[in-house]
Length: 131
Image (cartoon, rainbow, N blue to C red; front, side):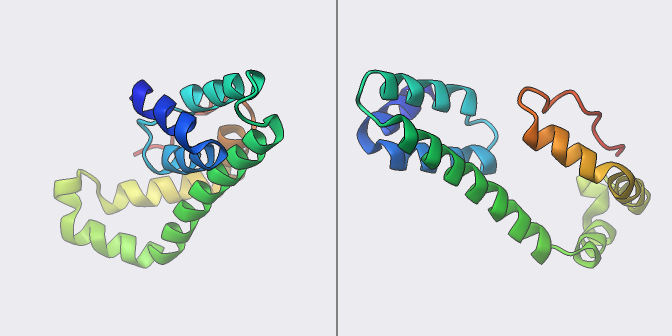
């Protein structure tokens, strides 16, 4: 994974930063903890511009978050409930689990998003919703 990330950044530059940050949001095994420090190294060595790295990283990350937001708007609560009724036993989730999770997010969703997305280093510090 490291070799893939470093070769993409070295060959594509800031566009590679944006692409990898988008992919990091969509596919969690791609770590931004490797992408951005290496991009910072390339900026410090003069191979990339610092401002372009920051802008590209931000654009890629926001684009990935927007993609999930768009998918979430398409997959409404009604569709999710239908999926659980039809295939819940295979997904190991029940309607009661969905109801509990929705209630938790209605109570704590704003703070969970703030702490999980906006505060550096806190993505694992907020309790996960009950399932």
